Each structure stands twice: as C-alpha cells, then as structure tokens.
Length: 129
Image 1 (cartoon, helix red, strand yellow):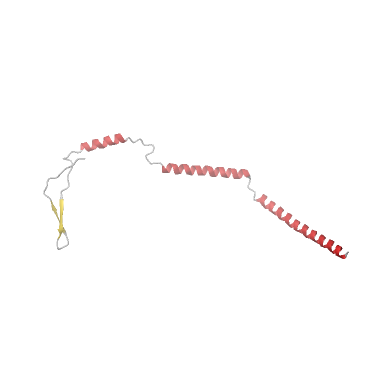
Image 2 (cartoon, helix red, strand yellow; image 1 turned 180 degrees about the vertical axis):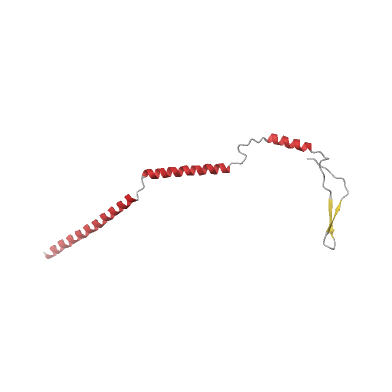
C-alpha cells in the first residue's frame, strides 16, 4: 500500500514536470511567433522585389548586348563602293608621282665599328599594284 501511494506521488510529480515543460515550450512558441510577426515580410513585398530585380537584370542584359554589337551597326557600308573608290584612287597615282626609294647596299663594318652604306647605281623600278 505504501508502495502504491509512493507510485501515485511520483506520477503526480512527473505530470507537474510535464506541465512546466509544456509551459516553457508554449512560451517559446509565443516568443517565436511574436518575433516572426515583427520581422515578417509580406508576400507582396517579396513579389515586388523579385519583379524589380528581374527588370534590373533585363536592363543589364540589354546594355551588355548593346556593348557587344559591332560599332559599325547602323552604318551602311557598301563594300563594292569602297572597292571602286580604292581602285579609282590607285588609278589616279601615276608612275611619275611615286618617288622610289634608292637601292642601298650595306657593307661590312669597318674597324671603327661603323658600317658604310653605298647607293646602288641602278634605275629605279616602279611597281604598280
């Protein structure tokens, strides 16, 4: 009988401990809920922020695309017209207008360490391309 009474007391003490633990857990949940409410970010705010970030990323991509395009974009360059203009300029040049460089022949160094340059006595040759 004494053993049964002792068992009942232990059971009551165990339930009291369980109640204290439950009270601590519930208090912790209340504090967590309060903290979450204080720092709560609304779903609409997050959606707005993500939409803004997407817009900025698209702008950066557009700028990057513009910077990678060749600088001649938008200029109309006709290659045939340029070739014709170059040909016309080349035909304007005559052999008389071109001054040829003299043919120079390098000779071995002298004892003093300087080299002698001699001019060849040949007719200048003009080559038109």
